Image 1 (cartoon, rainbow, N blue to C red):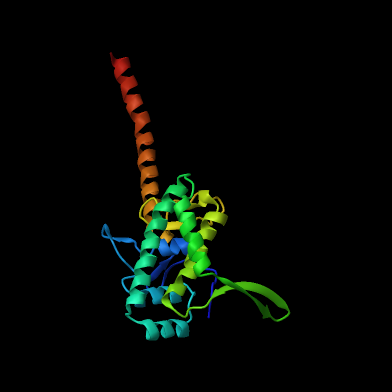
Image 2: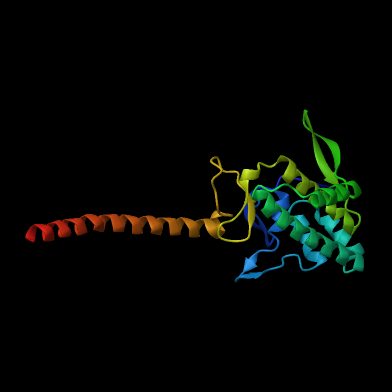
Length: 228
């Protein structure tokens, strides 16, 4: 049995990128660019299980059970391909949605179908004197992995503040901006933020240097006019 936990912001975890602040966006980020070429981080079913573990969606025991029972089966391969296909459909939809477009009816229908076929469950959890409910899913077969993915995608469109969901200005990674001002334009400080800040600093320095030279030119031009 597996629980869905909050994904905290960090760049890399177990070899995977987790900087989206939303599980659905972290799924999109499993196909980044390297040297200008797409890099598939989910090349096989084993990698998919490792990503689920890194995302804290599967325990090591659950992942091992799925790997042992299904391994390189055709069913596991079909599930992997279907998840990657869903990821790319979602990528196009998120880009359009970020730009102000509505969620397509076909996307809504597909997510509703997946959530009906692979639902998340709710259970009560107690800790000391307090109690809380949590979402969880049972991972017995490869298709069960759709449960948290479809749920997170639906939650993104239904609950996330659209203006804070965006693609990095410098790369293909997506993120949900949790900063106070909500004006971040880069995926993470480690990957693209530093480049943008350095570029902005260099631009400011060039602008200041240009302004510093402007009075000198004006003085020289005035002196030439007086000489005439």
